[in-house]
Structures are given as structure tokens and as C-alpha cells.
Image (cartoon, rainbow, N blue to C red; front, side):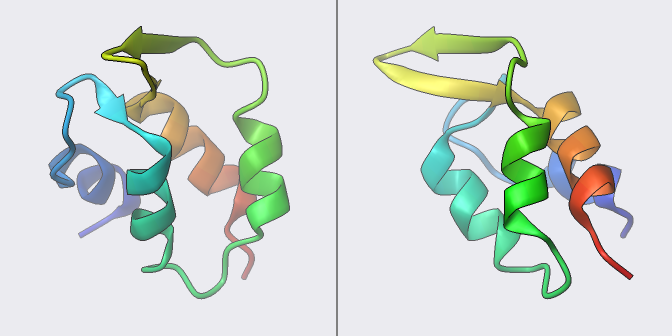
Length: 71
């Protein structure tokens, strides 16, 4: 399964995307990720505030993954 499929098939609390605790768990699947680059890639993205939780869109998580995975 590629990164896009992993992100879109990952079970999240909200259909719109990931809350921070879900991102933290999801990223444990990646051994070669630079967390600082991942977090920088999410600066300034559009989020949703729902039920007092910040939700990151799945498409932004995919972009952050591509930016931060080191080979």
C-alpha cells in the first residue's frame, strides 16, 4: 500500500482527517521520517475545528509525508 492509500484508509475519529493524537500514532509506522520537516510542512495549512479538536486534512498529511520521508 502506498502512502496515499495508507492515509486515506487510516481509521480516524473524523471523516475529514486526522487529529494530532492520530497523526502521532500513524507516524510510528515510518522509521525514516524527519518529524521536524513533517511539522514544518503542516505550518499554515487549512484545518477544521470540530468538537474542540483541530483536524488536519488527509491531503495535507500526504504532502507532509512526501516532504519529510528521508531515503
